[in-house]
Image 1 (cartoon, rainbow, N blue to C red):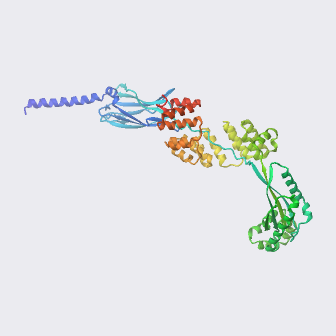
Image 2 (image 1 turned 90 degrees about the vertical axis):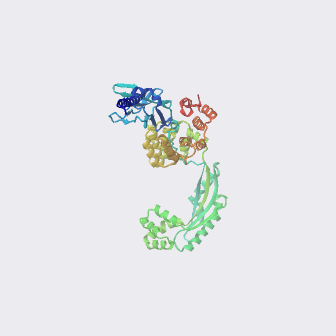
Image 3 (image 1 turned 45 degrees about the vertical axis):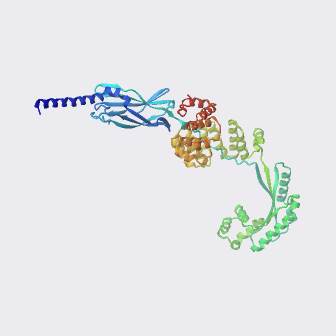
Length: 552
C-alpha cells in the first residue's frame, strides 16, 4: 500500500471517530436534554391518584431513551401536586450521568428506566389536583430547566364518604308490652294430714290472694291466663308416703279452690312430693345456728333417705327444724298467673309530663326513648339514675351526649357506669374514633367484640385504607352504607348495590359512583341530582374524579 495513501486513510479514520464522539456528545448535551425532554416517557401508577388513609402514594416510572442522558450531567426532579389553594412537593429525586463522581442514582447514556415511589400527605383541596414533575439539568455552572411533565390527574377520596361517627346502641330498657305476675295464697297442713282446716281458709295468705284476684277483675289491663295448685310434703318419713300425702293435699286443695277464688277457672294440679328445694331455701333464710352444717349435708348427699337420716342424727338441729322449717313445707300453693298490659306510648309520654314517679325503671327508660328532645331525655335518664341507681340509664345518658356531639360529657357519663361490659368498651372506642385516635379505637373495638364494635372496626379499616379487612369486618353486619362503601372500595360493585337499602342523598351519591364505574352515564346524572339535595355532596360531585367525563 502506498504510504501516503495509508497516512491519509488513518487520518480520515481518526477524524471520523472524533466526529462520531462529538455527534454523540452533542445529542446528550445539557441543552439537548431540555430540547429532547418530550422523548422521555413517564408512567404513573395509579394514573388517577388515590387518597388512602390520609396519604397519597404513587409509583412513577421514567424511561430515558438512548443518547439522552449526558454522562457529565446531574438531573434533579421535584414531584409536585398542584391543587386549588396551593401545592405540595415530595422529596427531590437526584440522578447523575455515568461520568459524575457523586452518590446519586446513575442513569446510563444508553437508555434506562428508573422507578420511584412518591408520597404526599393529603390536605383538603387535593381531590381536585394534578401531579407534575419539575426538572433541572445541572452541568458545570449551568442550570437548565426542563419542561414540566404532567403525569397524573385528580385524587380519589371516595373512602372519605365513610360514616365515621361510630355506632353506640342504647342499652335495652327491658320494657315489655305485656308482663305476667303470679298471685298466690298458701294452705298449710298438719303433719301427715291432707285435710284443709277451716282456719286456713281465713288465713292472711288466702285473704291477700283473694284481694289480688279482686283487683285483677277490676283492672282493664289485667287478665288471668292460667291457674295452678302445687302441693308438697315436708322431707321427713318414708318417701313413698310423702308422695301420696302430697297428691292428697293437691286433691283437697282443689276441692276448696272455687270457694277461695269465687269461681276462677279450674286449676292444673301438680304434686311435687318431698320439698327438698323449699327446705334448702327456708334453711338458708333462717336464723338457725347450724344452718351451714345442714346445707353442707344437703350438698353432700343426693339420696333423700340418706339426707333425712343424717339430719336426724343431729338431734338438736333436727328439733329446731321440726319447729321452724318443716311445718312451712306441708302446704299447697294456690296460684293464678295474671297477664298485665303495660303502658302505651301515649300513656308513657303523658306520665312523663304529669306523674313520672309511678314509672318503674324499665318504663322510665323506655319513655326516654320516645321523646325527641335531648334535654328531656337527659332529664329522664338522670331521674332513673337518682331513683333506681340505674347503670343502664348512666350508659344511655352517655349515648345522648354522644349523639349531640358532646364527647367530653359522653366520656364522663360512660366513666360513671359501674358494670363494665362489651357495650362500654365499644363506647369508649367510639370516643377514640371521633377524636381521631384510630389505634385506640381499633384496640377497643377488638376488645369489645360486640356486633356494633365489629361494624365500627370496619370503619376504622376503611379510614386506614385496609379495605379487604373492612369487608371482612362488615360482611356479617346488617346491610348499611359503610358495608356498601367497603364493597365499592374493593370493586365488588354488585354486592355494593345490594347492600344499599335507604334512599338518602349519601346513598344516592354512592350509587352514582357505582354507576360511573360501570359506565352508566344516564344513571350517574339522575343519581347525582338526587344526591344534590345535600349541598355538601352537590359541591363534592363537581370535583370528584369518580365523575370525570360525566358531569362536564
